Length: 314
Image (cartoon, rainbow, N blue to C red; front, side, top):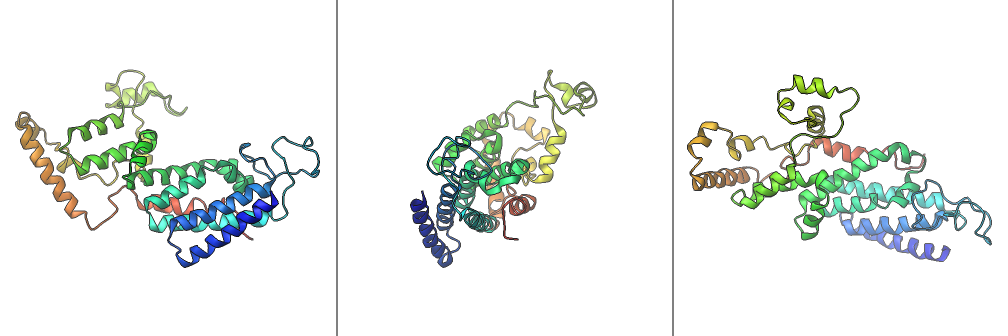
């Protein structure tokens, strides 16, 4: 284990030099983090693949494997704390790069590291249970940004497996790009799912009283209801798929009932107008790479969420 750790740590130095030469290269940064994270696992003395543990091995006897917990298979290496700080520094650099570069590859790299749960457990340590939701939120943010920005087949396939996180936003953007394709409308509507939710509300919400007071919820069959508070929180945090898409009402959906009645039978006319309006919107927004999918609030959260739980030298 010691020799393998030495080889990986030596490789991390090579990638560190590569990062110095090209600091905006995501692959160099990710390889640097990956090598150091592998060193951390080897230094911990814990069995690799044994699950999430917050502390390194406390094993003292190097001859027998019967003493102590089963996941502690080796003695911890003396350089464990030093390597832990190195991993933290490298991950901070990658997170900072993703915040300013905002490329699909950078967001995907962050997701890959955050999903390495055994490394994250050792890296965060005592704060892991307290900060687990922050880590999940950070992962969800970068996952959503990756799928929104990446049009590769792999990203599209992954998007179908992450419906709850980002499919609505993804299909909304696909629809904007080609509103004349009826399949885009069908996929978007399917991604929205059923109206309302059947999940139980929090204790401070009386579902029956809520249905009586809300004209929208009262029209739904029991036990469905609309979580208006949750929607408003998502809007405030920049996580709602409709953020930045206010132009849909006039330019894409045509919520003018008189117009809809007059053109109900003129499908070709509706399609022509849709295409004209969307083409105009695309031209107006061509100079801005951000179309509302990533709000300032989200950027701040992605940049600050990790500062409190990544270890640093004091």
